[in-house]
Image (tube, rainbow, N blue to C red):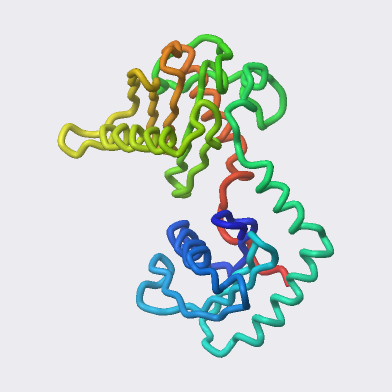
Amino acid sequence: MCKHKVVSLVGAQKASLHPDDMLLLSNFVMSSESFRTSESFSPICLPRYNPMAFLYAYVHYLDFDTYLMLLTTSSDAFHHLKDCRSRIEMVLLKSNVLSEVQRSIIDGGMRVEDLSADALLRSGSSPHLGQYRPPTDSPERVRDPVVRIGGPDGLWHFIYRSIYLDQYVSSEFSPPLITAQQQKRLYRAYQKLYASMHDKVIGSHKTQFRRDENYVLLCWVTQDFEFYAAFDPLADKVAAINTCNRVCQWVKDVENEIFLQGASPFSW
């Protein structure tokens, strides 16, 4: 893992970890500076894996941000896992993986500026953002995107959550959402939108469009995913829906690349 991000996951065939347990593991390591100074071996309970038992986690930082975590049910496996770590680390160094991971962290993740109008309309092999017809439960039929500040049609930020995998991907914060206060305000707006979409009294909704002095907010919930997006407050409604449709299709096209489908089986 690198900070809170999973680089690779390998395990026994029936030992996949739930995203909640992965988040717990990353917080467990990131919350203590002691893991940075020496290799560690510590018990930890992963409730989605087995709430009634402990696993034992061997943790070793490979560089400033990247660390290796090895999990076992055996309380006396420290020296065995230390040898495993040594062999794994040698392969990672020889293959230049660690430097590539650091480069990726510096470059950052998805940015709405990279989703240009040309990219949205481009046809060709997957992944692409073009030639997409909105499905029958799409909010509206739509027209071509227009480029404004941020991404296409004034797109400022988006979150896409795969319901089946219980994982999400979101764009990086970029102008005009550059301060912590602005980002926190957007998260609160998403929170209110989520609560409205899943209201237990009046029932859930499939789509919602909101406009106020801060944003245009659009939410779309299907059986497969939930999508939340924030646009420039002057964004055109039809164009914003068009952009959301195309971004959702693009994410679905590259799901295998951006989401963990489960642990790869051991191959050594």
